[in-house]
Length: 328
Image (cartoon, rainbow, N blue to C red; front, side, top):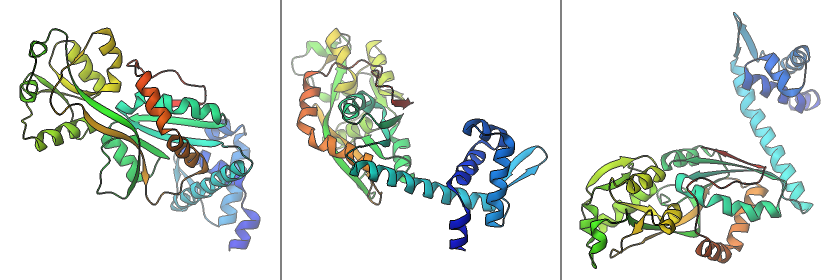
């Protein structure tokens, strides 16, 4: 069977099959690949004859995938994945790093990622990068499903088989709006701060976990006035005078410099955590992924210095080069 498949099955047939599978339409697949509908039908028919089983079937006017089609799509993804690894390995031997780099960043890390990518993409302009910005729960789910090359996050769980490479300090600081009464106290107490209409991220977020851990360690009580779904929402709520919060320094640098927020000096703060590059232990790293990890590891000192000197980051994600796609 294997020699017969090797002599009759073509990559073009698998490419056409994937397009039909994803679009659930012969005509849409043809438009995507620049083929006529009869040409698509011919490729699928030849593939079905090679395998000896139907891959698609019509019920009424709707196109459905057969069980054989579902089996084939899994193997086709593996085949094209290995081809991508082969192309990347060949490019690396030629001294060229090229291919796709799929990154996921928890919401606060979106302030860091553009600056990580800028110099890397200058060195490797043939790399095409996509960045998905998600919450921590989604990031952990994507790690579980091995959907991406790397996840950038803090508070990496220690009960999962993950590789975590710290690369940048992530300071969590207590912030209040200008004129807040606690600013008049030369030695404010942390519990008084926590009692002052504390605004929190949702349970499970990295910054919330860090604050929970700190409070448990020092026997402090959390009094939540409101829970919000993003650091940006918490930041704006503090500026609006709704309360106080503990936020990553990188997410509020512009507001601190403009005087829209102020840091309250409390014992035990800032809370120091690290941003990490994270991936499953069993993952097979692509050459592009390895090149990015090596770049970050080789430039740890420069990254720390850069963010120390240029920490003023606007609340919106900075523009990047044309070969980066950001999904939120």
